[in-house]
Length: 142
Image (cartoon, rainbow, N blue to C red):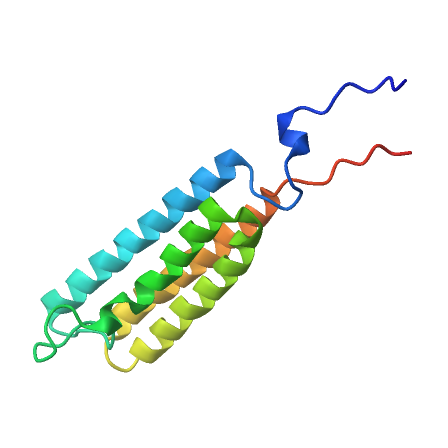
């Protein structure tokens, strides 16, 4: 007979998945990043220097390119909620996508590109923090 207490619910979950509080933190952070992208898009249109991914006047407001930067936070949110083992990988891909979006925008609208680069940095920092929030395998030490 073992003298160890039975594992609680959190220990019986898979190692590598995010804890519930980290899932909430990742989802809220990426919702805020998506909201910041909307604010950047609105600002770009207000100043008259639209980014490459914003719909032009001739293509109409529902151009497919308008969703490109929003794929990054959406992918991380879906990964965190559905399969949190892959949230870190989705975060790395989202960081790369937002960084590419900002690099392409440098010549067209440098101020908006700086905001996009800052959001890419926020995505990277959230990904690094979420890696710390993963469940660890419980070792008995024997």
